[in-house]
Amino acid sequence: MSIMNTVEQIKRHEGFRRYPYYCSAGKLTVGYGRNLDDVGLDEDEAEHLLSVDIENALIGVKRRIDTDCCNEARVAVLTNMGFNLGIQGLMKFKKMIAHVEKGDFENAALEMLNSRWASQVPNRANELAQQMLTGDWQE
Image (cartoon, rainbow, N blue to C red; front, side, top):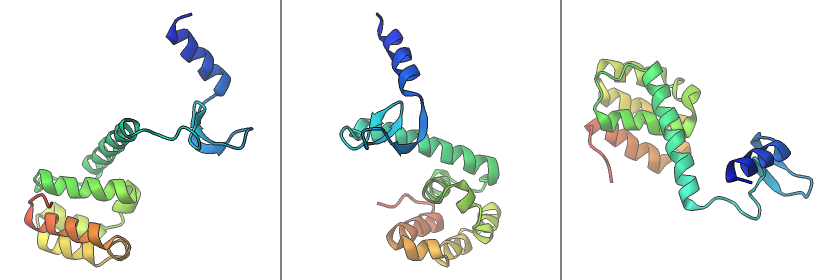
């Protein structure tokens, strides 16, 4: 039996579950039977998932926000926020987005800091607001 046959057989037996659930043995499980309690994710798997999620956030930003005035560092701010808040959450920053689309990065940064999000993740918000303001990557 080839590995592909094994994969298809296990997929058929396990079934796909997009969201975590508890299997019949009471283990937190996701996907095609990935036992998160005992196996979890290794760092390479987590980085792969992160890269997919970042790409999806970037696609969402590019579809919904005019980033013509933005350099790479500023687009990264929007992508980071889209990853953190979800694209729908990011789109609630209507005033900030309007400032970004006009190239008014000072007021965009102020709008970022004048939010509940900034009080929830102050270190992240301060760093990203500074990056939005200056257009320079923060370290």
